[in-house]
Image 1 (tube, helix red, strand yellow):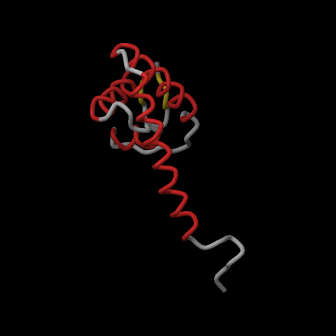
Image 2 (cartoon, one colour; image 1 turned 60 degrees about the vertical axis):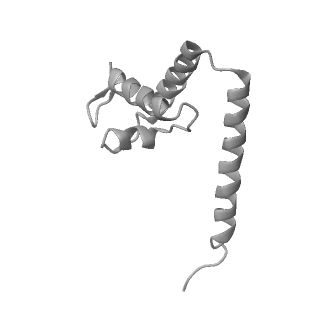
Length: 103
């Protein structure tokens, strides 16, 4: 089924890329931009991104169900995700606030 009409990308192509990314690191955070970057494409109108997110969720669930991921793996992933958020929060604090404008 055609998911992205701007780039003519099918759901099978997206699932193949997601599975390849999961094979590299099965607990990485996958977002539509990462999928498109791996396919050397870019989102144009981005109307397909909600469908791509649904495909990411379904494909990731199927991937982990087939590999019988354990509770310890999930906990490790959650700690890595929290660390990622902390690192990005520090970067946000270092940026200028919206109330500070350049002339």
